[in-house]
Length: 361
Image (cartoon, rainbow, N blue to C red; front, side, top):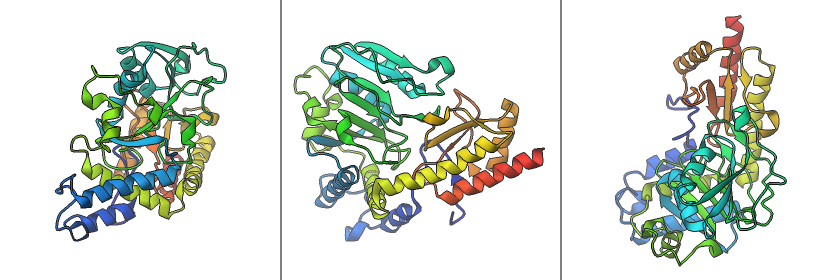
């Protein structure tokens, strides 16, 4: 890392690509001759319209998003989507959820306030350390959608095979694995991702929704909570998160420049293999997720005790590796190695942990 920057393993807000940060820095005081910072300009101006149009088109290019899907930039982050999804998609008042960790659990609690929620599969019995079998779920015919959190940020597990929804709409929270690998958008009815983990600064969510799911009969639903409002107004019904959209647009262009999502997946696989190979060979450190369901983005691990976990966290922080403390709900340690984490950051952390273990012995 350059300029005295730390290796930041935070789960979010998280590390961003250095070339992107440098571009943003260079445009900070005067965006392309406009005489203004993007944070200062009107969202109704021609120059900003170009920014948001480019961001959407670059994302469409990256993900090969079909024309019958809308791309929406909505404030409120991923958490607001826990409510917006059932409010907009529950026509029959019934949905199936798969429970695989803290974030799918929170989504379940919010959806229950709107309609009936059927938890068709869960890995709670083993503290969310695996993805349950979703090949033959019990899905009632009148189910409105099937919901998954495709990568659980806290518990560090991911779907490598999507559930068999038996013809029902699949909804996915991709917040902590968004743009980390190729994605066949047509497999989903709706994808959403809070951007502060793998794309940009906090305060916004990207929603990719199939057009036929956007309803015009929700007249009693507050207008900001209707997907139709955002779709009809090009994500600018009100002042959007202009800065986040601008920064995300920079990241989309950066990902295109390095070869797109296939290239990014290869980089992420190499980084994750480095870390998991170390955990599998270590006597002191142990991964918490079954091998088949390990996340490429979030790697939780533990030592033999909470006291030793805390000692490791303190040592890593002192050495310049930040945010390795596990989430407060599960403890232990966690390294989030999102797209922007360079391979040398993972290599350096692995070397430090190996040395820590050797010296401890």
